Image 1 (spheres, rainbow, N blue to C red):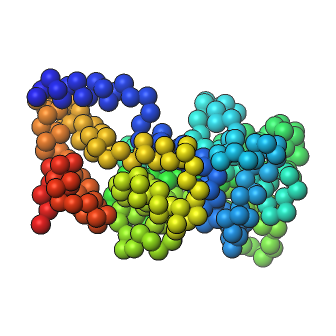
Image 2 (tube, one colour; image 1 turned 90 degrees about the vertical axis):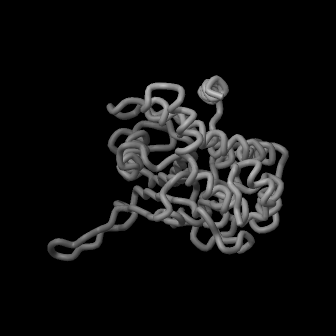
Length: 319
């Protein structure tokens, strides 16, 4: 059993694409991106999905626009003295009636876990700042000292693994004007240049067919439901075309056995290193993940899985 656990850990270490990598691929789907955009991009408030779609990458050629995914911008940023930053998803946005030009930039980060050993919010603010800095002397940014052309940026963080107290939280952080002396209002467009949005998808919902934004995030990232059901709800409740490519990505992302295995083995490896021996890994798998397995089992029950299937995949027996 110890050898099997060690082999499984080695196999996990050699995986080229992790769960959050699949999330990044799904986030590049234009319909998924449009649903997110219309709920967090202030300028898109009240717009339909069809209208938002026309605002994604407004400067791209007509042939590329027909693709189901955004083309995306260069995600490697070396503009600042702080070194290289790699964004998960980065694209230009146009305002309604944009006339084919980029008016804003949007970055989305698929964050596997919230507890990184530092405040994730501070990192998100740093990313937002870099999105402003990188605009200088670039085609879609501003030239030399022409700061009038500095464009607004959005940095949106979706955290899949987080504590229950953050379940369903969606906070916005932005720049505001405060009058400390004689009141004088500057044009909002001169300072409303950076929005940070932190999103923590709910761990459970009352009705998976309610068509709300938070339920969409739950279905996509935290529900644990099988891919067939997930694809059905995304199509019927949210109007997301289920192409072959998106369907395959959802199937990969929704591999429950792999997801549970990853959860258990990662914790087991953590426990094993702490103990300094392979027995610690086995103990971590068997002991350290009981609570999370119970959470997964409860989610599966809510999604209609049979008790036998729940027991087979998690080892948990529910009443």
